[in-house]
Amino acid sequence: MSIMDPFAAIADPNRRYLLEELRRAPKTVNELAQGLPISRPAVSQHLKALLDSNLVSVTTEGTKRIYAVNSRGFDKLNLWLDQFWA
Image (cartoon, rainbow, N blue to C red):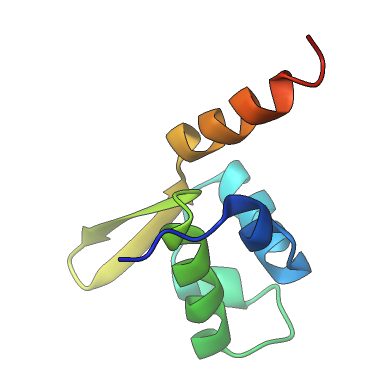
C-alpha cells in the first residue's frame, strides 16, 4: 500500500463529496455511487485514494465492504493545520 498525500486526496471534489457522505454514516460503494454522476468503479477508485491517504477505513460484513471516515487520518491533518492558528 502506498501512502497518498491527504491534501492531494481531498483536492478532488468527488472525494470531498464521499467524505461528506461518510461523515454522516458509514456506507457501501453502491450507496455512495447513488449520489454521484460517476460509475461505481470510479467511486471505488476514489475510495482507494482516500484509503491510501488514511482518511477512510473499510470493514467487511459478509460480502459488503463498509467505508467510514478514519478520524486518525484527520488527526494528522488537524495537527498540521493547527500550527497556523497557534
